[in-house]
Image (cartoon, rainbow, N blue to C red; front, side):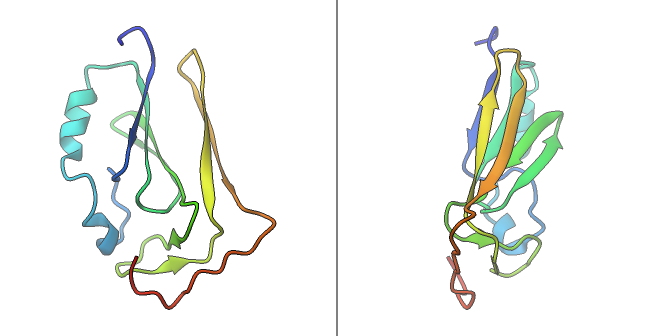
Length: 122
């Protein structure tokens, strides 16, 4: 709706993770997404998951976020599958009537989640 702000949520990532094993699963036509969204000034943000990592960036003028997993985390910038020791997390999002987006990542604090660091795939 052109009179309301929009927030786009995807599963696959649009920005490179600098991890070859993850980037083979990116949104293949991300350039087309930018082209499709360009006429819509009401789009205020884009969020995705899939990469099990926290990301806060800007892409084609859009605020872009990725959310960590509520399970295992993938270590950033590793070309082969590698787990991270960060605790499970999630992203809280507040969408305001004026189009602003407030967001923060939270992680489990009072428990210790220890993934099997020997896993070689997910």
